[in-house]
Structure formats: C-alpha cells, structure tokens
Amino acid sequence: MNAIDVTGLVKRFGEKTVVDQVSMQVGEGEIVGFLGPNGSGKTTTIRIMCGLLTPDEGEGRVLGFDLRTESLKIKREVGYMTQKFSFYEDLTIAENLEFVARLYGLFPVRTHVRRTLDDLGLTTRRNQLAGTLSGGWKQRLALAACIMHHPKLLLLDEPTAGVDPKARRDFWDEIHQLARGGLTVLVSTHYMDEAERCHRISYISYGRMLTTGTVNEVIRNAGLTTFVVAGARLNEVAAALEGRPGVEQVAPFGATLHVVGSDAEALRHSLAEFDGREGITVTPGETSLEDVFIQFMADAKDNMG
Image (tube, rainbow, N blue to C red):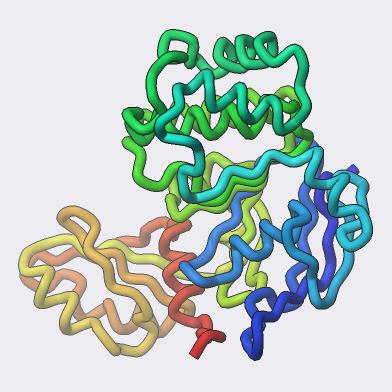
C-alpha cells in the first residue's frame, strides 16, 4: 500500500500555477527525496499532501484518507517539519515538548515528553532554552516535536538547511532508523548527498514533475554523457569549450573540468581537438546527480515570470 498516492494535483495563486499536474506515489516505509530549485512548488505540494491546502484540481489519498474530504484525519497522522524553526525560544526544550504534547492530547504529558527526550538524545539538554540551541540541536528538537505523536508520515521541508555536516549526518541516521520502524518520509532538500541517501527521488521544476526513480535510474534516464578534462590552464580550456557543439555544462571539479552534454557524438568531437594538446587529457567520466539537476534547471521554463 502507498502512503501517498496523488494524481494531477494543481494549485493556483491568482494567475500563477504553482503546482501543475503533479502525481506522486510513495510506499509505506519509503524515504523519498523531493528536489527542485527555489520556487519550484515543493513546499506547496507538501502542504497539499498534509492537508493544509486544498488542490484546485487533482485527487488522491494520503495514508488512506481522501485528500479533499478527509484533510483533518490526514493532519492527525502526519508530522510536518517546516524550514523555519517555529518553537518558543524563551521556553526550554522540555517545556516546548510539553506544549506540543498538550496540543496533540497526549497524556500523561510527562511520560510522553520523557520518552521523546530519551529517543532523540535530548535528555541532558531538557532544561536548556530553545533560543540558545545551535542549528543542529534546534533541528533535533523540531524532529522530536514532529514524531512524539507517532505519525505514520513525516513531511520534511528542507530540514537541514543551515546545520553542520555532522548534524546533517546524525539527522539522516535518525530518519533511516525511523523508516526501518515503518515511518514513511518525504523530504525536500537541496543537498545532493542527502538525495543519494533516499530510496527514491522526485524532481519538480516550476510546478511540473520532471522525473522520479532511484538515483541510478534518474541519472541513466537523463541521457547525459560526461568527460573529465585534466591538465594545465584549464580556465582557458573552459572558456574555449563554452558554446561548442554538444557542450552543455563546463564545471571545475578540483584540478579537473567536468564537461557534460546530451549529444555524446557532438561532445566527443568538440573535445577531440583538446585531447593531448599541451598535456591535456580527456577521459570518460561518470555523470553525477548534480550534473542531471543542473541540466534540468537549465532546460526548465520559469512559470513565475
């Protein structure tokens, strides 16, 4: 059974179509990464799925409940973590969790708070004011508040923005542990390493879903070819390659250039004259998820203009 099964979602604000015929299926216990540029409709889609917004068109079910007629039931079974830290900074961690427990009608409150503090490793900081926490600890508090009512679906809207790499890794370890327990997770992110930790990914651009699948499937279906250029004076090489037939991306990677295009033969021909010149080498490379997403962004048409 799918935790999320929606078809043809459309949401307009005035004359702007922010979500345009979006369909998505997410299986129970699955972690799906939701990716796309700023303004692509990710947050609006997430808000529709958790019952906060009603679609103008489309239909579907979330956790078995009808998206249009049973939004209140959906809200009770969902944990939604927003981009912005939204807890009381002049309350302690424990006091914030007590407040959330009462909102959800969880009794006895102290038992639920104590268990949540233990589960998320917050017990030693229970009396620390939320406003004094680092980004990573604020994130952990927000996650604790989202899961203390035992939701079946967790919707995370860029949850790791502004936190350090270790805190991000710890957060993702926690997400995978929750998924192993049966929790379904839909997470929007801009980080490629986070996308690669998802079971599947979906890419939306300016309201339209462009692709969905595993990381390997998305890379393979993009149809891109990548070459690695190494040697001296790569800045000059990069400038010379711009605009040549088949060359769609030229990006420095350390001491090399990654050159990417969708027409393999034209790309190979454009690079041939550089191979062997003044110690320059051109070798086949592996197309990365970032290469694919840059290509999507270059090809997409902004619907907000």
